[in-house]
Image (spheres, rainbow, N blue to C red):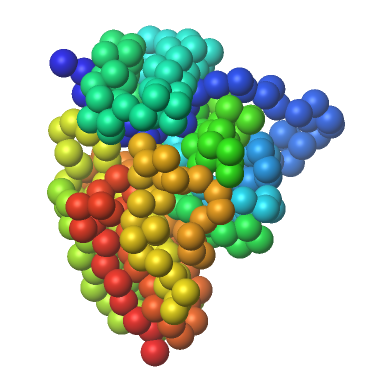
Length: 309
Ligand SMILES: [Cu+2]
């Protein structure tokens, strides 16, 4: 039986790729490579495409992710199995996800039926796809800096938020091929002052959460053998926030899941990585209420509310 790893991820993977935009690409790539060689990469989200380098070094990499769009975005890195090409990856994953999403939306199939259909429709190599982290959900106009350790290979990067009419962002062009090269950065991981540990399926944290800037370490202690992975996002809660709407929003299999408009403000986070990895993201907190929340398991209680004062 196939591993239904992050469905989520896959999801993402798909479709109509817009090829990288043409203008002064050589010059741009050159510039990006210089930046990348120092271990700091800049990736920008627009409605609906990513701009950033085509190749980045392996090892510890710091990525500054800016959302210049009007919608909530994120990115997730999927390491493509060695035996297939980027195009085969997209071609293999797009139809099952498209079909299942259409059936959920138009025919009202149940979520468990949707998962069964996905498992049946996914290519054999799907179990060899590795989700390798990425910047969590982030509001328009905001940016987030993450640091994570990448291994060389061929990657796909995607955003699978949905527009208000239920179209995945990847289908509109938010998908990009990235090569992680053998050249390694010399940077070391940052020193975190907040630690989060993710297990099946709980969020624990330590370290004083005060107003101001923090570096959050996310320890992927456990990941499920099958099903979707554990990740964490930071959501801001105020008196107008309907927390049940937020919980429902986190799961793409819900009709309103990941669909614009977002029911709250999202401030970044870290997508799933294999167990044993640690990755980092920065936050700048003001006084107020927040929650660490999981994408796939929020409905099972994988969230933790807290107050900054
Ligand atoms: Cu997006």
